[in-house]
Amino acid sequence: GDSVTQMEGPVTLSEEAFLTINCTYTATGYPSLFWYVQYPGEGLQLLLKATKADDKGSNKGFEATYRKETTSFHLEKGSVQVSDSAVYFCALIPMDTGRRALTFGSGTRLQVQP
Amino acid sequence: NAGVTQTPKFRVLKTGQSMTLLCAQDMNHEYMYWYRQDPGMGLRLIHYSVGEGTTAKGEVPDGYNVSRLKKQNFLLGLESAAPSQTSVYFCASRPRVDRWANQPQHFGDGTRLSIL
Image (cartoon, rainbow over all chains, first blue to last red; front, side, top):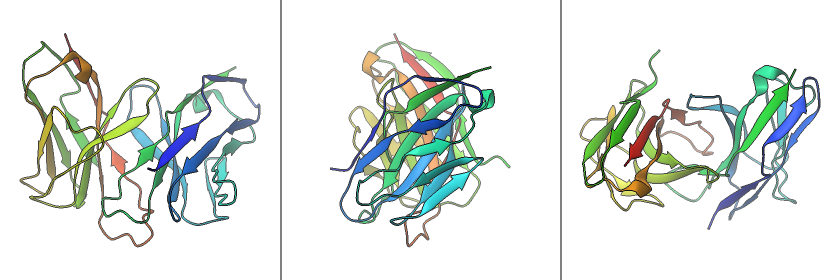
């Protein structure tokens, strides 16, 4: 079945450091790929998405590129801020299911220190 | 701009009790979902609905029932609560029209449920 694997956290960085959170997936065909962010006590918010190979999703300084050859969708940010502290989820929606439900990775907690 | 609203936000139950979680969305979305979030496991799909009057099972449906009598509401029921159902429950919705499966799901803020 479809699955998403993320690097385990927590990831602890100093402010202005470079961030990479690894995400790889297993799915048939060409799934759509997403990164969601969850701030403490809140629901999930869409951070960025990509729908086909080599697409780059970007938002709020975060970027991720859909790599079909490596089945990856790594999240990057050049300079993190304390306000980026949250849990980040990589997720996919397979193209071949009518329910269009998300399959999530286990989440990676990011802690940014001043 | 209510979006997706979940009630209640917190609840403590005793083993064997029953309760219903309510999800309401005001975006006229056809698809609605219930997920549970457990530490280290991400979110897992419990049940979903592709339209009013329809429901279907997700990956972890046992012990739960759902109903979608109105398009805007999706109810999740626990018939006889068990400690294993202690979790944070999230509801989400999305529109139907989506050729590339790339429309985002809109999430509620969650319901934290503890079963003693």
